[in-house]
Image 1 (cartoon, rainbow, N blue to C red):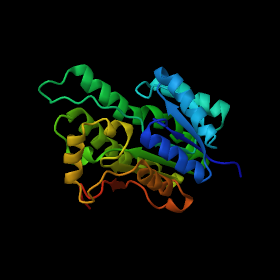
Image 2 (image 1 turned 180 degrees about the horizontal axis):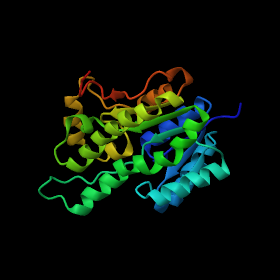
Image 3 (image 1 turned 90 degrees about the vertical axis):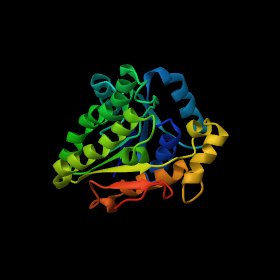
Image 4 (image 1 turned 135 degrees about the vertical axis):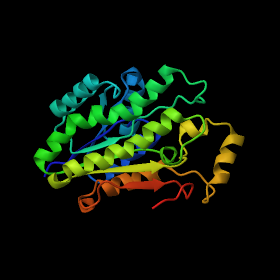
Length: 248
């Protein structure tokens, strides 16, 4: 049987890269989606991965645009084949207290982090249900569960991601397609490493495990949820946060 095809939006980022590697190790043919303005960065990422023995495809698409997401999906299907796994990992932050937040900062985060779930998933879910197998994993955040000062836009979008997962999971459950959410806590990536050291120390002090997580720890869970044996897991939210926020 030909390898199943997985699309990871935001695939060239810190967590996205780890997810691409995890899925490739599990036998999927992986396509890393990237923002069109980052073409040079994406091609450099692809070459670096190839030099390390990892052959990934890349695909350009602005996930905040339905039309652009449609073109990206069509490009992947025509060049590589139908998409069996979708990991919605693309995301941005535009942090500001609500009092100072501008409409464009609100819209940018909502459109990239929440509208994108509709824009990209809409392109692939019908094919999954027709073939009777599919995996959709939406990357949310601990701050979508507990809220975060200065992140009304981000917290709203990430909370919405799980509402999206639960609703869609019910619509496609009988067709062999699962839809789940993963909510990472603070993960050691280039983005978090750019935070001032004293602020990082304050963050880590709140975490019962007394450390940040690794992208690989998030990716491992994505891999499990995309496995054939995870076919009875759907509509669930999994926390990868070192105990920072606990719920049931």
